[in-house]
Structure formats: structure tokens, C-alpha cells
Image (tube, rainbow, N blue to C red):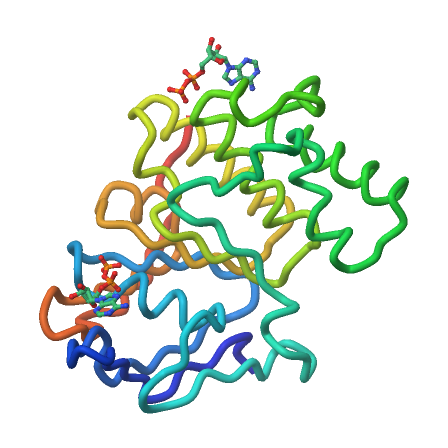
Length: 225
Ligand code: ADP
Ligand code: ADP
């Protein structure tokens, strides 16, 4: 049973643009998939539909491997922009999803602080977003997405705005998190290097007309370190 099953999914926007055409994909529990293709090929549109942010015009997205629960409760989403609340500290931002689930504050803060340590931000719990670098803000955003232990982490070109070195560090740390926690991951990118470095599977989309061109297994992980 796949975690997510995407069947004959197409998306046409109100203005007539067809962004995604007849995509069929199964995502397995614990696999790291890159969604690779040039700008405008429909990667974000497909990722957002997996997240429930926008309905397919045609086709279905089911969660057979999520214990019958609604997918919304099983996923974390990381946007290209870190989208942190400016009035809240790093820890305040990370505890938000647990507060929404009405977890007791003490437990939420303990889990939030542990998650911040895992993304390399021990000691920055009380810092505000304006006091953090771009890379550090992205780390907070990843911590916020993972703190509820979702089955799947959806990422939309999360490191695109960062410099090469910061990006490389974050790629490594993301792989480290995945190797220890084995959530499923879908990573949207237009970088061939990034997709090969990170993933076990690369789904290639075409610029026009929003189709999946290839679904590649990456046999051996790219040698790290
Ligand atoms: P990618 O993430 O691969 O860059 P997108 O999924 O963002 O591609 O966009 C795919 C196509 O759909 C593009 O032609 C884009 O302009 C169009 N598109 C995206 N969002 C909308 C929208 N809300 N309304 C109309 N067209 C859209
Ligand atoms: P940007 O992401 O905006 O390009 P950097 O990531 O290079 O900026 O970081 C800016 C500053 O913050 C640097 O002085 C860097 O050493 C510091 N910094 C970044 N991440 C950490 C961290 N995890 N712990 C301590 N200092 C950090």
C-alpha cells in the first residue's frame, strides 16, 4: 500500500492554463522523491494538490497508507519562503502547530526545543526571525514542519533563495534528518544536482504540457562526505 496514490490527476486553472496533465504516481512510505523540471512545468501545482492546497480538476489523490486518516494531518509543508511569524520567537514558531493541536504548553515547548536542536539551532530558541539569517530561518521552517512527526514532508524549492554553501549544508542536514526519521519526502527542484544528491527517486516533469516524462530510481545514494 503506497502512502499516497495519485491517479489520473490533471489541473486546469480558471484562466484556462493546464498546469498538470494526467499524472499517475504512487509515493511509498519512507522514500525520498525529487520532483524535477524547469520553471512552469507544474511541480508546485502538483505538490500543492498533494498537500490539499487546491483540488485536482480531474483524478484523485488518496492516502491508502495513512491509516485511513485524512492526509492533512499527516504532512508537513515547507515553502520557498520560510513564512515565519515575525512576532514569535524561533521556539514560538515551532510550537505553533502543536498549539493548534492543543498540546500542553510545557510538552510543546520541550518538543519544539528538541526539534530546533536537531536542525542545528540550539541556543536560538528565543531569537526572533529578524535576528536570524536566511539559512537559519529555513531551518526553523523545517523544524516547524517536522515537529508533529508527519508521515510525509512536502518541500517546494525550499533552499532556492539561499547561497550555494548554505544550501549545501541544508541539503546535508535534511538528508541526516531523513536518514534517522525516515519520513517520506517530496522535494521540488529545478536542479539536477540537488535531485541526484538528495533522492532515491526522481520524477521528471516536462515544461509543456505538465506531464511526467520519466520516473527514475537512483540505485546508489550519491556519496556524501
Ligand atoms: P513550477 O512549480 O514547475 O514552476 P507551477 O506549478 O507553479 O510550475 O505552474 C505551472 C503552470 O501553471 C504555469 O504556467 C503557471 O503560470 C500556471 N499557474 C500556476 N498557478 C496558477 C494560477 N493560480 N492560475 C493560473 N495559472 C497558474
Ligand atoms: P545567510 O543564510 O543569510 O546567507 P548565513 O547562513 O551565512 O547567512 O549565516 C549568517 C550568520 O549567522 C553567520 O555569521 C553564521 O556564522 C551565523 N550562523 C548561521 N547558522 C548558525 C548556527 N546554526 N549557529 C550559529 N551561528 C550560525
